[in-house]
Length: 264
Image 1 (cartoon, rainbow, N blue to C red):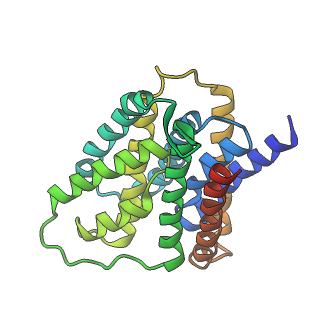
Image 2: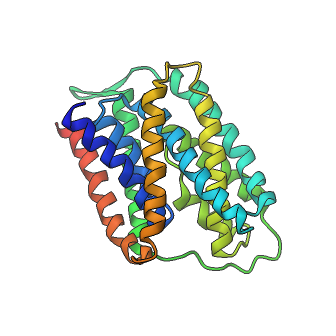
């Protein structure tokens, strides 16, 4: 095992610790870790990330189910169109994207480059949400806006399928504003949705690529161990205070990815 791979597995543990501490955000580091420490191509990395994110979210969702915080009706209304879109994106859209897209002058834009740049943009958006650290307003919604909720599900399904990240920073505001859920139930329901979206989306890749199961299961297991470490640390450290600092870290990472992919 190389020193780079050792750092990569430490990164997997960090992903879980962050998820356990602040309840989200950590999974957005999975793709950069897989690409830059294990040298996977972005398409494979986003597929593996879906499995890691889905498994990690499932652990959190199960804990919240025990506390009866998951609103299953809302989750299924949102997740239905979302997981269909994730599956379509992984099964058909990504394989259909040509390896060579276009030139900007003498600069060649490839499929892998486009995926990494799109991922970096999502990281920047997520980082801004974490840095602002503002919770969505507890909207007084008398009736759930099912049409907008389903539309949001389709959009998030596409984003999740493209970049392999859960999209909790988009899902939670939608559940609060469009479905009128209290924050704790929105966070819990979001984890359930992310688990369904990611794991079903991952099945779209099973026939498109050869999965290195020993590596993927090892990486995922380390991330899940990290979650329990993060939950334990949460007794001593205020995760909310760490959220803004982690947001700045994600912002720097997003900028670095754009610089590395475009300038280097």
